[in-house]
Length: 239
Ligand code: ZN
Image (cartoon, rainbow, N blue to C red; front, side, top):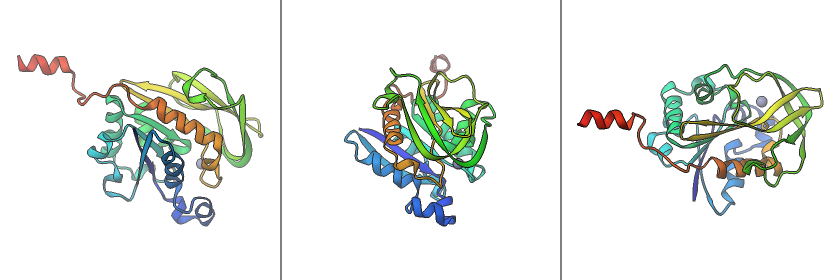
């Protein structure tokens, strides 16, 4: 079983009626629901209001893949929690960052760059093009799929050169965006996926769900270290 934790700041759903209508129990529950139907996936959720953001050492150690949705509450995530998440990725935990998680503390720490991007809250149509047909994350996706309304994200996206760009987003306003990118950080695999603005029902879209399910299986660790210190230094210290 792949053990997934879906983390959501869970603020918009409690403070904006339009968002609550789309995600009455929160974006995290909507994601957990479709993932929970998979036979090889075991899912739990955590939110900002939980003690330690629901991301204790124990929870993270028992998480194979962490999914992150955040937006306006990025600064409320304590630095210790962000560092803990970063360290678990370095040890081998898989991580999926969705939409506005591009400015979350764990993503910025793992990228080491501004992660800035251009955006318009336009509700444009987005056409998401598959540009790597052989990758595990793009399986089951046609040449492209469309989301009737999404928030427009635009290049330049201030990330380090991705290891792979799997999807390109085109918006009806003309913008282009690297909508699906992979990164490796030490033992951990990271996938960034752009769709998922809170005022649109993006996480009910079958293609979006397929990509996230594929990404969970791709990001699940093959190897997980239980230490961050250099094993050679440790050995030398003992001798
Ligand atoms: Zn958004």
